[in-house]
Length: 377
Image 1 (cartoon, rainbow, N blue to C red):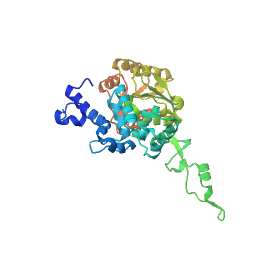
Image 2: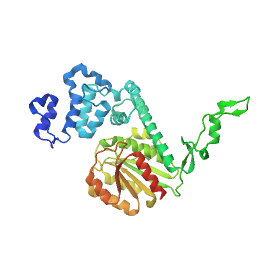
Image 3: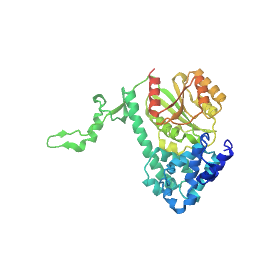
Image 4: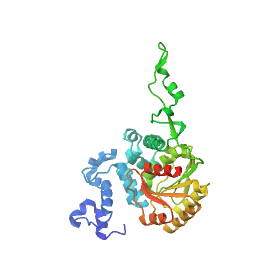
């Protein structure tokens, strides 16, 4: 906040009530407008009183100037404010105004529409949840994760196609992939004893994956700072899919100032996500050192590094240079999201790219496509 001039700081303190005296917002105030809008969403209800209680159930605040809902507001404050301010804002929202019910009450979670924004909010607030609320939260997370997995699994099957992968089903109806035994079992209820004929109403097909020779080792390394929630969700889903491919051996590691290896949970992305601790500082160099210790065959190892590059450039460059020098392929994803709109440090990202890493803001589908092409070479 010290980077703003006195007028901007007063505007944030007073909110819309101070506009008459302070005049129009300075166009050069950076993200001050976002800060003011986010603070107003919470504290404007001080004057509104009980009329604003509709917001407590997750509805939008009054007027077009308040387009945020509760999950979006929670995610926004983690993008804009330091840790101490976030704790105060969340405390006021929960205890002073009672408006976090949509992510801290079992009944609300059971009736809300699952979405990525809601999952982000759940990950941020799970430490405030009782055990019975956590069960409802897991159900929401599971619904969103399964939707993402289904879409990405189909994408991977389509790109890889070749050898039958008999532990997974596919929606692609290709005759050579027919799973005859499973098809018969699934359609036994359609047996016609008079005609002694089995009517196939729902054929089943194997998924197919290309055999690439020796397996690739894929290390998914994820920065779990507060702004990375959506990226972590996509990373967990991608890692869980890679885990099941016979052509890959995958790991998932998260970090802030400490490094946590979540590989034992990679086949259960819901459990994995519920173990993520968002927020805190970041030590990417330490995480890269840990990833280097996992490498078995460097020239058949891909490090998918998902980070906003808000870190010490010289330390990151040193570690990336060492990894690339050993033969590891490093892909630095500055954003892993269908909207590809994450903010990141372009200067540090460029320095890492100059050290030999592939760096891009990308979607999960494009990342999978890049990985498939890499493994085909």
